[in-house]
Amino acid sequence: LALSAVLLTADAPGALAEEDVMPPFGDADNLAYAASLWEQMEGYRQWKLTTPVYKGASPHGAYLRMFSSYVTVGGVARPIVVKENFGGPDVTAETATAKPDEWLRAVTIMLQREAGYDDDNDNWFWVKYAPDGSVMSNPNGMKLAGRVAKGMPAGCISCHLSADDGDYLFFND
Image (cartoon, rainbow, N blue to C red; front, side):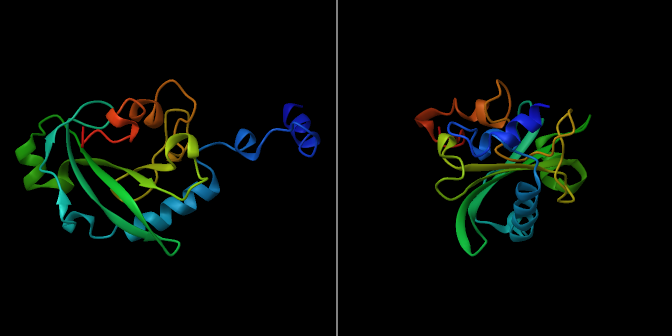
C-alpha cells in the first residue's frame, strides 16, 4: 500500500523526489556504474600515488594500502581513491606487502562523480568490492555501491563526514 501511495502521488505537487523513492545505493544503475568502474581500475597497483601498507581500523581492515589517481568512466576522467583492506588471523604489514592477494579481503573506493549526483556529500560514489571485483553486500543484503548509507547514522558517508576540512578524505588530514 505504501508503494501504491508513492506511485499515485508521483505527479502531485510536493511529491517525493526520485532520490527519496529510489534507494541511494545497491540499485541497478549504481551496480552498473560500479562494474564499469572496476574495469577502469585495472592495474591500480601500479598507480604512482600509493601508500605503503599501514595499520588500519574497523570497518576497513587490520592493514590498509591506498592508491589515488584519475579513471575515465563514461568518457569523463574522475578522481578516485582506492583502499585495499587486508585481514586474517596472522596478517602483518610485512605479510600484506609481500603477498597482498593472500591477505586482501576487500577493495573500497571513493570516486568523485559529476555535480548533481549527490551534492549533499560532495558527489562521492562509494563501492566495496570483493577481491574478484564483485560488489559486496551489507548484513541486510544491500549491495554496497552508490551513495552508501546516505542519511544513516553509520556507514561510509556518516564516517567520512568527520574528515578534516569537509573533504571526506582522511589520508590528507
